[in-house]
Length: 259
Image 1 (spheres, rainbow, N blue to C red):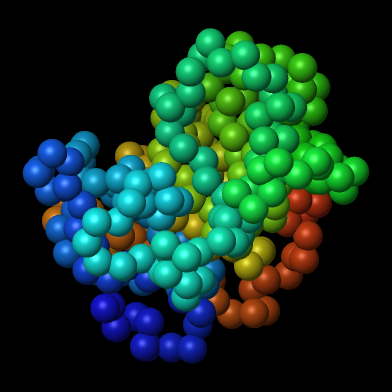
Image 2 (image 1 turned 90 degrees about the horizontal axis):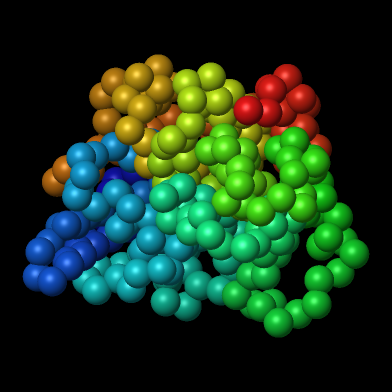
């Protein structure tokens, strides 16, 4: 197990210990060990086929760990239940453009965690969805079909869906693929604000090497096979000046034009 966990008193958010994964006997992740600490921002870089998306899918329970162990918030993945603590934005190409859901329905679906799949949403739940839509400046798109939106608008919808429960860990899989350069810059400005001012931990797959270098540094903290982990820390309590993620994130979203 990585020595980072023992190096300080900061809480472990994700612990990956000796994890391997194969597709049809082709190994894509081989004996990976790495720890993500509270308020880390981890940029995950690697070529196609290196196992980036596979790793993220294991972290959110979409793929089963076949060898090794993953722990979330110090709980074994196979017994972890507090999925509301995790927000996940999958790759944009995972969206079926013919899917008939509206923007409001997609955002609201973020409230249906695995513990409350069949529970009726409360007025407070609906308000959280409205707050997330307002923060992402997509309130006026509520009745539009998700497949009718631009890439930048879709990105905001899925980020709003991931934020409705004020997650402690946000996992982003290539969130800026297929959107224009200005919208990418706006997006990175927003998530940097979220990381700097809130008790949030980020794991993000990105092909934007310039962004990773400028924000997370040119040298990876850890490398395993084709996976490179670039890490920035924001651990000092005094760095966390905001208490309400959605309301304070609104401040920076108002400076960013919806594209």
